[in-house]
Image (cartoon, rainbow, N blue to C red):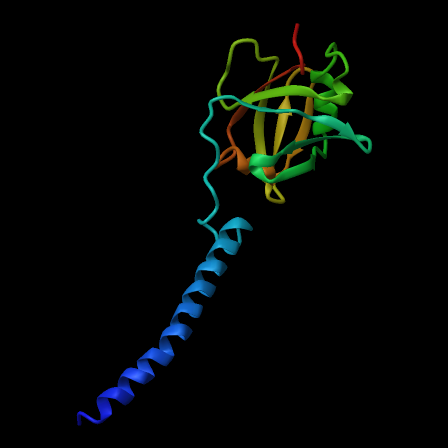
Length: 163
C-alpha cells in the first residue's frame, strides 16, 4: 500500500495546474459576463444620485450623448425625444455643440418640464410632455441610471458654461 502513495501524490500534482487553469478561466468568464451584462442580475447597479447630468450634442442630425461611466458613446435619442429636446433647448445658446441636461425622478428647483411615464415598449419606455403635448421613447440606456422606469422625470436644459 505504501508503494502506491508516491504515485497518488504525483497524480494529484499533475491535476493542480489543470485546476488552476480551470479556476482562472471561470473567473475570466465571470468578469466578461459582468462587463457585458450577459447574466441577468449581474449588472452593475444604477446610479444613486438624486439628480443626474449628461451633456447632449447634435451628431449626424440627431441628439446624442456620451457617458463613459455608463459605457455609452454617441447614444442617440430617438422616436420623439429629439423633438422634446428641441423644445427644452429653446433659448440655450450653442446647444447644438453641447448643453447640460439635468434629470431626476423627483422635482428639483428650477426644473423646466415634467415627463410622465406612459408605457413600456421594445425594452424602453414612452413618456409624455404636457406643454407642448408630445410623446417620446426613452431607450433602455435609461436603466444605466434607474433600476426601473420612473413614473415621472423632471428635466432642465442649461448652457455648458452658465454665466
